[in-house]
Length: 189
Image: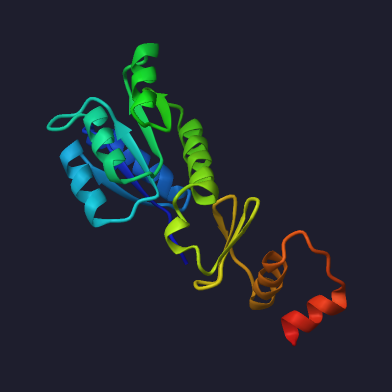
């Protein structure tokens, strides 16, 4: 089972911990970095599917961190900042951020934006590109034949063995219609 891992980068430990708890309640694994240098080190050593990044931080600010991330990674980055001017938002989005949220933020909105970015990344982005063999995708449905995992809009859905086999058969031939007998033959042989 593939766990979605998120990196929260904020020099305010209390905010970072609050976001971590909020996202863990949604079932995500969350790591924390307190500055841009820590974030870069963690990104080089781990696989993250999304980054929430504060802009104003010591050692390496969020925009510089974002530019370093974009040198080698195409994972979603949500900027989280006290800077609310349009020019700040435009700059952040222009250099590679996927979204921009101003502090103070609304927790349910943050969770919704995280889910939205993950859904796009898991369906359309680079999440599966490195392992295309054994991955079937039809619309918002993703089936991993190797790990036996099934995702709807990037969210893991638990299936029985039989349900998995039926979906595997149907997704192998998208757009085709099969009789119940044909499905029975192919799934149960």
